[in-house]
Length: 316
Image 1 (cartoon, rainbow, N blue to C red):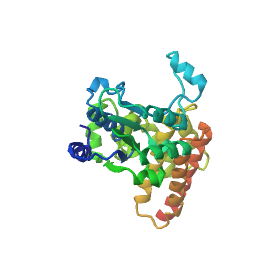
Image 2: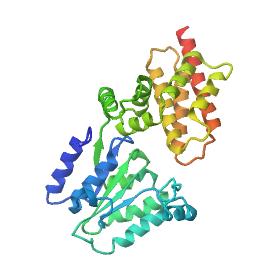
Image 3: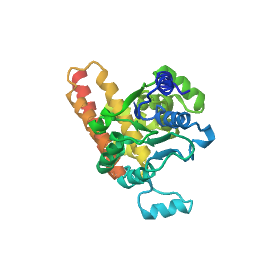
Image 4: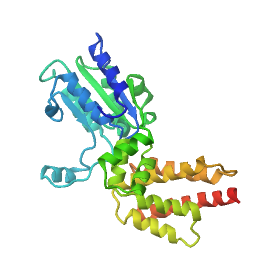
């Protein structure tokens, strides 16, 4: 059992043992706290599958990011690396719904996992809503959500919520020392700060070696960057061609670094608040925008430099 899942498992097992199991569940919590793993394990219990069957069981259907287009689909079919779409599309929902017109294959229950439900296209979300409103007998939905507020209110209202809490920094540190013993203190500290209580995210950030990126961000916040030299260093550490996950991790780290500065005693925190708000905006755009890595690094650096200017005036 993963850290922080005890309450969710207790609620799930109580419902599973009850007379009327709710047909739709919203698994809510930060990215990386293990909601997807919980969904697969819960679906396995629901349909009576063993652990090795969960990924390919005919009555467990997982809807997630598909190949971006036909070209990427051919790459997948050929066993080559392929690029994923940035949303879950209506065609995937329609294909799932066509299967719901038949009975479950191996028993009387079927599980539909949508991971993450936050990234359903608008039409796909509306189509899914119809299935939630009139669920076939024996069909149960598990919607994994990192940001429930992004879901349609009508979808949220039809789900029973299971909340997955974050993990304390002390627990995260112990976990990373065990899982990533070669990580240095700076890398581990950066991962814990950026992950904000998410063990999966922390491990991913360690693998990305974000310690030096965090130090570069801290240098800009501490000293400003009047000659743009520190911003150039930050851009080099982020990399010329970072993938989507690295960009997301860098934005999460920047948000965390600025939030920590905001917690300090400042007389004039307005520019820090503005910088944090802009980083939140960039993070929200990241799943669907194609960012130029160099320009994004400079924009992050500029926001940090503005926050540094706010700190200097307050401390002076």
